[in-house]
Length: 137
Image 1 (cartoon, rainbow, N blue to C red):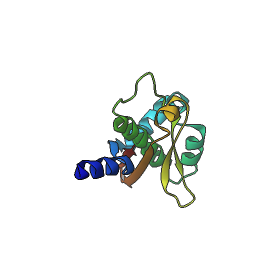
Image 2: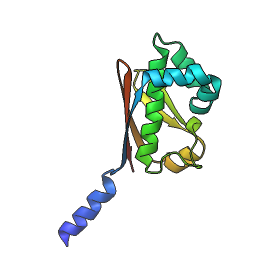
Image 3: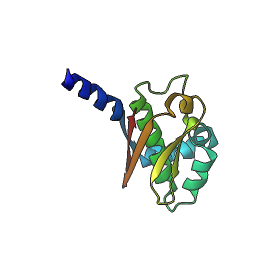
Image 4: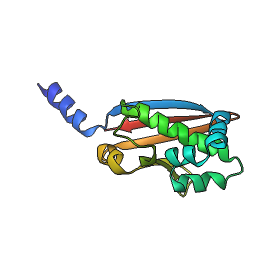
């Protein structure tokens, strides 16, 4: 009985991983989408702040691809993917003063996941970017 009580107590105090998502994106594919579809693509997927951040970088397509991968990884971590309840615009990648990328949620996505801890890691190498999202509840 003591063990069960201790275990129950630990479960209540210890955050549990509820979801993990990973995505890899080709920079050239995102570049082609932007070149072919322009604002039709960027306006659907990225916030104004994300677009402003990316275009000011020496390798803007790499940064667009990283943000795309982060949003995909988040959708996988939620376990629901992109459905009618989520909008690309409601999942935004911002950077802390240190440069650390974090996800900022809004709208229904914020109401659904705003009480959870969300961790994001991005990596770039050549024509590929990766993103990992972990959601703790």
